[in-house]
Length: 170
Image (cartoon, rainbow, N blue to C red):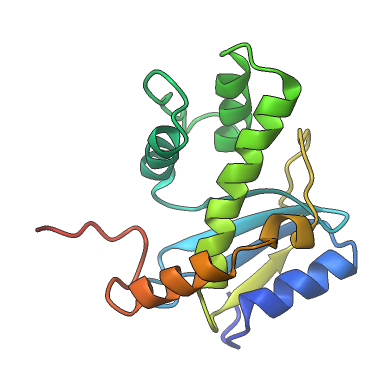
């Protein structure tokens, strides 16, 4: 990661407009061990994930979007595992292609909300890290449409909880 804090919003907008391909690593500002990974192909967002807490995030989203039975377990040994396995798990429920794309869209939006709630952080562009066989590609504008209120809430929560991966004991 470079040590020159940047705005994730500005970087995503710029890379989307230049039809860039690769992975944008966006560091969690209060926990540098965690980063968000935004995969782009020719400026289109293919998928958004994190380098840690993937299983917990998937289980949360699986419940939130009511995707049926228990969430699958990620096989960490498989290359590019989370995205490929997520597509396979969604497809195994015999949905239409449009349903799979809809769920991927929802998963990406959730990640984007977290990313856009970060004002400034260290960001690294990794052109060699890519998703080889993507099912979808969303424009930044399409994915970010009507997220202002959710981003505002996420920013507010970040004032109290430094990272979405922090487990809070009550």
